[in-house]
Image 1 (cartoon, rainbow, N blue to C red):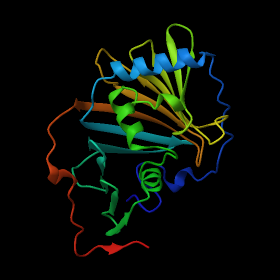
Image 2 (image 1 turned 45 degrees about the vertical axis):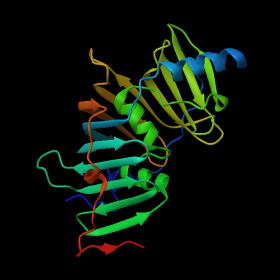
Image 3 (image 1 turned 135 degrees about the vertical axis):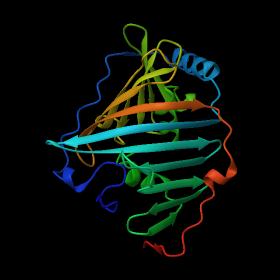
Image 4 (image 1 turned 180 degrees about the vertical axis):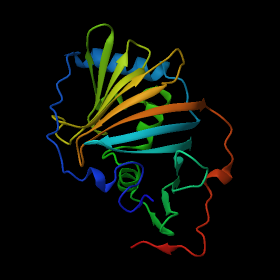
Length: 258
């Protein structure tokens, strides 16, 4: 049985081979002048469809050096900050782990060890649960929906590449997005280190005629090296989501992690 203390969402100790050399971030694109970059960014924001809520079922397999592990995720999110991710085995409906954010408060349940963690450190908990350093709720929404996040255009640099693909580099969130034309459809993303010269993780999104992506390939370099594939199923944008989805009571027999 998987130990969620060392494996929250896919990166287990079987991948503890250490860090690999993170590749350099060298987009094959030309930076736009400031005015052009601002105008392009504002156009992307204007044409971006509103995402008030999202629900998706996803299947992932993470591998390293011949070892692999697979999970299912049920992802539910609602504006302005609510997020719930259920971690499930590939077979069966029982929950291996559960992450819920409601407002600023975050709850993490480990159903195998019967422990829980309550915190406001959203970044650390998301990294621990999903195994991806630098992942954010806004990134999860963009990856699952294929729609780029709403940008702060004063902090984003737009580069113009070939074949109508533009690159948006967010200097605050430390992430870059490959976007198809003026549509804002995400084709790839790169989580960058604080100096923005190397890549900590990157993914490519694939579409099969649907508005939302059907799958994603993933490469992790920091903190551990691994490769993965994720299949997105039953993606629903703007469904009605009840408040009870994000209201979770900690079972009485659970102990608090410290």
